[in-house]
Structures are given as C-alpha cells and as structure tokens.
Amino acid sequence: MSRVQLALSLLSIAPVALAGNVQLEGLTLPEEYYQQRDIVKGMFTSSYDAYKKYAWGHDDLSPVSMSYSDGRNGWGASLADAMPTMYIMGLDDLFHEAVDYISGVDFSQSQTEDTVSIFESTIRYVAGMLSAYQLSGEKDDILVEKAKQLADKLVLGWVDGHTVPYGYVNFTSGEPVIDTTNIAEAGTLTLEYAVLSQYTGNSTYEELAVGSAKQIMNTPPPLPGLPAQGYEPSNNTFVGGYVTWGGGSDSYLEYLIKYARLTNTDDNSWVDAWQTGVDSSIKTLLRTSTVGDWLYLADYDSNKKIRHVSSHLACFHGGNWIQGGRMIDDESIVDYGLQLADACWNTYASTATGLGPEVFAFASDDGNYTGSSAPSKAQLDFYEEHGFYITAEDYILRPEVLESQFIAYRATGDTKYLDRAASAVASMNEYLLVNGAFSGIEDVTDKQSARIDDTESFWFAEVLKYLYLIFDDPDHISLDEYVLNTEAQPFKAPPGKGHYGSGVLLDIPVDASLTVGADLPEVSANSFMPVSIKDIIGLDN
Ligand SMILES: *[C@@H]1O[C@H](CO)[C@@H](O)[C@H](O)[C@H]1NC(C)=O
Ligand SMILES: *[C@@H]1O[C@H](CO)[C@@H](O)[C@H](O)[C@H]1NC(C)=O
Ligand SMILES: *[C@@H]1O[C@H](CO)[C@@H](O)[C@H](O)[C@H]1NC(C)=O
Ligand SMILES: *[C@@H]1O[C@H](CO)[C@@H](O)[C@H](O)[C@H]1NC(C)=O
Image (cartoon, rainbow, N blue to C red; front, top):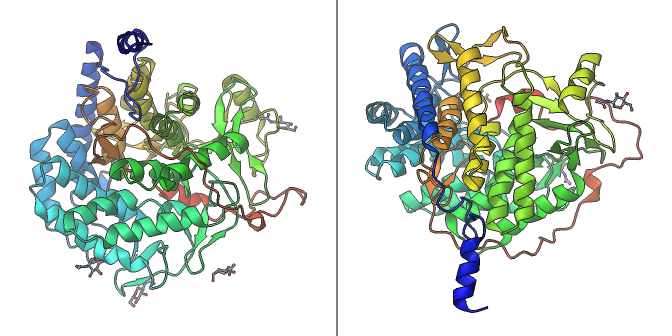
C-alpha cells in the first residue's frame, strides 16, 4: 500500500481514538445537551449554598436536618473536595472563598478524633488542594503548603523498615494505628504524592507511595494479577484471599494505569500488572447473568468460591477497562468495559427512582452463590425481570456508575450515555432534592423513600463534576490531557506515549495458601472478609 493509499484507508474508517488515547478524535457534544450542563451547575450552586448556610467549614452538610457532620477530621472536606469542581464550572467567587478558608486550616491537628485515614485524607484533601492549585494556574502556593502540612503527618503511617503504610495515623501522638490495612488504602496514593513531590521538589512522597503500590504488586496474590483485599504491613503478606473489584481493593487496580499515564514512566510493570489483573478477571471472574445477559465481575473468596455479587463502588470498572484498554490498544477490553458500564447502568434503569443501589447480586450458568443468605421471593422476582437483584437498597450519592458512563461517552461518542446522564439528573431532582440540597435515600425502589441525612464531599467532587463534564465540550478536561484521581480530581498529564505496557503479563507466582480450597464445607455467610460492610460503606471508591 502506498503512503497515500494508507492515508486514504485510514480516513475512510469510523472515527477512532489515536493510539494510546482514550477519547474519540474530534468528538463534539450535540448542541441540545448543553442545557443539561447548566442544570448540573444549578444543582451545584444550590447544594453548595445549603452547605454554606448550614455546614460552613465542616466536612459534610446534613441536608435534611439542615446541620452538619465531621467524619473527615473536621477540616472542611466538602470545601477542599469541591474546589476543582468550582474552578471547572467557572464559579470563581466560590473558588476564591474556598481557597481563603482552606488556607487558614491547621491540617497538622485533627479537629475531631485522634485518628486520621491516610487514604481518605489523601484522595479528598491533598488531591483537592493540589488539583485546585494546578487548574487555577499555580498561583495560590498556600494550597501546596497545606497539602504538604497534611501529608507530612500522613507519612507517619510508614513505619521505619516498612514499605506499606498502616491505614491510620494518630495525629495527637504522631504514631500509626497498628492494624491490617487493605490494598485500596495502601495502593491509591501514587497520583497525589507524585504531584506533591513535583510541587515541593521533595521526592519522598512519591517514593513512599510508589514503594507501597509496588510491594502490593510484587506480593504473591491468590489469583494472577489480582491481589487479596487485606494487607499486613509488618510482614508484607495478604490477609486472606478475598479478590474483588469493589470497595477495599478497587482503586489499587484503578491507579495502576493512571499512575503510568500521569508520569509516562518507562517502567512497564504498572500497566503490565493491570493487564495481568484484567486477563485474570476475564478468565476467572467475568460472568453473564442468566437473565438479560448482563456482564459482571464476580468476587472470589478465601474459600476459592465465586461470589455472584457486585456493588456501586465496583462500577468504576467499566470506565477503567475502557481507559486501560485504549492505553494498551486492546479493543476487546474496551468492549468488556462498555458492557460492564451497561450492566451498571441497568441497576439505575431498573428501579422506581431511576437511581442505583449500593450492593446487588446475579446468577450465571455456573451458579448463584453470594456468601450471604439465599434471595427472597421478592428478590427472585426482581431478578427475573431485571437480570440482577438488590441486596442493599440505599443510594448515598455515589459517583461510580455515572463515572463509567462519562468515560464511555468520551471514548465512543454514543449519545445513549448522555441520555442516561440526563435521566440521572432528572431522578436526582425528583427524588433527592431537600432544602435546596440533595440527600441520599434508604431505598432506590421506593419513590417515597426515607432520606439519608448526609451529603458526602464526593457529591461535590465527583457526581456533579462527572455530570457537568459529560455535558460540556469534550475537550474540556480531556481524558487525554488529564488523569482524574479516584475522587475525580484532575491532574495534568503529559502528551500520550501512543502505547503503554510491554504486553507481557507479570509473572508473580500465586500463593495458593491464601485460599483454603473449594472442597471444604460450604462457607457461612460471615466467612472471612477483612473489610466489613460498614467499612465499605464508609469508603469512597
Ligand atoms: C521530604 O519529605 C519527608 C516527608 O515529610 C521529610 O521527612 C524529609 O525531611 C523531606 N526532605 C527534605 C529535603 O525536605
Ligand atoms: C492517640 O494518641 C494519644 C496520645 O498518645 C492518646 O492519648 C490517644 O488515646 C490515642 N488515640 C487513639 C484513638 O488511640
Ligand atoms: C504477619 O503478621 C501478622 C500480624 O502480626 C500475623 O498475624 C501473621 O501471622 C504474619 N504472617 C506471617 C506469614 O508471618
Ligand atoms: C439460586 O440457586 C438456587 C438453587 O439452585 C435456586 O433455588 C435459586 O432460585 C437461585 N437463585 C437465583 C437468583 O437464580
């Protein structure tokens, strides 16, 4: 083929993404959707007004009781987490007011309990401040100083001689809380600390975060490329063999490709580790529901049993597979990602409120074991109609399902994702609105559901940012120019390399002793699972 013929043949095929890029080339938003963007901006300003009125300076607005709560050490989590969204929406006055407030916070002392979560504080506070600093032109140096002030205490979670940090630091004593951690907590710090190292000129932060993620990557896992959820920092061993893409593990997997994309590192092991995990997931965890043919990723437990469960938190996986698939030029992984995003959307499309539940379950040809009690008659009926059934009915303003629709839209340009986002916007305004703000609900299947009196900071940081950006010019915060942290905080990335990873799967031997074997008696409902449901509910993606 001559060069001219080649060029012509490339022109004639359907729109594609450039090699290694995530977004479809030349994508433009159809004009009629821009009004949705303005609706979303209005949702932000009205719920933030309520925050200012009833919860100013505190972590969360309590929208029903018109009060507040401080579950993130009282430093004003919603303010720090919302700053990048304000900047992106062009809400400059609110942005500067928030920067002024955060500039005066003493992050070296907790305002509430002694103990501080390294993970939660990094993804919300450190990331919110650094992203706001970067987006707004690197002018407010105080934001870097404040991020550093907090991080300098968080790094006390790394005990001398350990590569993986404990999950919590007692800010009063400056000592870590000695307890097992999980791979999401210990493996989700690389983006934030790489940026902090860049701005402070101190490489320690990045080295610590990278060391932790790499230690997890190199610890013999229960399944190839799929580490167990629980982790013991004192001797670098997994605790149990529970494998999931859901809470407690999720963002370790998410950050493998994101760190590679943010830094363009020559070290292929990050992307290779991700590809190994995805390959293993396709072989071991991927299932199709017997009703509706919905694709899902099951969990794998410490007794080598497949659990046919999934969750709102896990629903970041569709978007993550789309992004990673594009980075390694593997459209079959992209296609799985699109199907996962569809199945997650089905959990919204199937309820009376049009919003999706916290935890749900499936059945496939090889069974329907979930690790908990058998489904009720009502759950079975729901399954027959919708191809999944609900095991926790609440919606607490989580973003992951919409996050994956956003990435799917940017990658394909299919307007069905815009229509889904518009449907979610309508549902939120119909069923969540209270006192000008938005609350969670106890039961997504009930239009008159009781409210949950809490607006976590991820409402401002993630839900409203993804909804705003899906209805904005696709070049605004392009996924080929920014890497979004697990709280949707954008960090500027260098131009893409064209291709990521070596294509060779990581060869870390599996540790069969982590899982005890399927020939044992049926496990009980409360068989070992290091992260309790309570913790998962508390965790952000
Ligand atoms: C870099 O940061 C670490 C972690 O806070 C600190 O221990 C170290 O002293 C810093 N190095 C320099 C040269 O400031
Ligand atoms: C944190 O450390 C302080 C000072 O040593 C101690 O009094 C307090 O009990 C510790 N808090 C927790 C939750 O362990
Ligand atoms: C690792 O340390 C934990 C906590 O001290 C302990 O329970 C576990 O038995 C140790 N595992 C190994 C393999 O030494
Ligand atoms: C799961 O399997 C059991 C036993 O085979 C069956 O009674 C039940 O209806 C199944 N549940 C679903 C959701 O398919």
